[in-house]
Length: 113
Length: 113
Image (cartoon, rainbow over all chains, first blue to last red; front, side, top):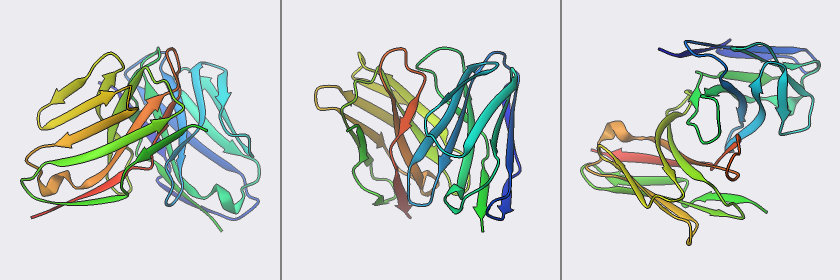
């Protein structure tokens, strides 16, 4: 069966520090991969999605970036965190193709202080 | 501009009654609409998907309707139980062939014993 791993579960970082969040999927191949952010009182915001290795589409221009170095690995990064980057970060995967349901990871609660 | 509105932020209902949640959208032409359940501190979990050419979908105590003329989906939980208490999110794509899924802010359902 398929599983998605996301870590760490919680993270407290100072403003201006770098960020690296990792997500891996097991039990499937060539999935679509997604990064979402959920800020307090707001809905899920799509940040990046990827339909294949090295293929990244950005939804929101800001100081975050994403990479997909392997088929089932998706990384969210920042060189310098801002206070506004605080939130609940969720990785998700779906089968290839449009119109597929998403399977979410357990999320990372990021607090930037 | 594009909007997804879930009619209420919170809904309280007596155990055993039917809960009805609403999702309205503007300036979208989705090929499908999905409903997810999210518990506090967890990632959303997929519940149901309904396509634009389907009027109704059922799964156990859950029922979803989709009216593309009204641009509305209704999500029903019959014989509600305290364990159904959670936030329910609707999500829709941006048209046929789209990989991106946009979420509403959710409705927090509380089922009172």
